[in-house]
Image 1 (cartoon, rainbow, N blue to C red):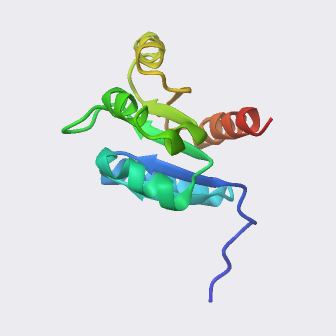
Image 2: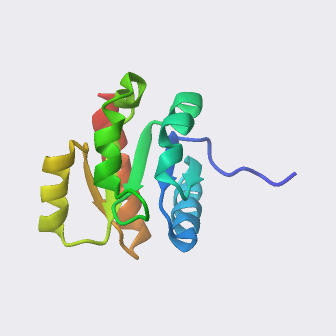
Image 3: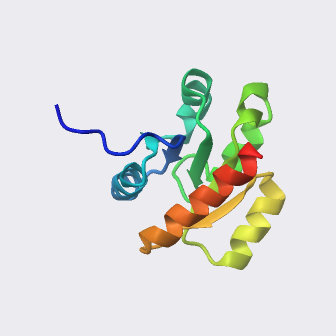
Length: 132
């Protein structure tokens, strides 16, 4: 059996309708020592969070059926969803993301970037801030 790499530093759920974005996020996060769950449907968010209890949720903004900021409105119906920070993950301009965070109640945002080091640093900052 192949080595699993470094010990897992936390469990992260990534929700994005793009299989490419999910694959990149999974590889990058796993290489940094995280356990990663993925879904291409925001409608699965409550079920996954209830069963898996991720430490952080990265939620794409632009998805079919429901945008990420609309999904956040629905999460207010489930108390258990309030325990995991939900961070918008998008390539939208920073000002637009700040506005979406304010309107939706997301914990914040992480810009999609091709710089994997910057991405991991942002994820680690979020996890550090939520763990006290």
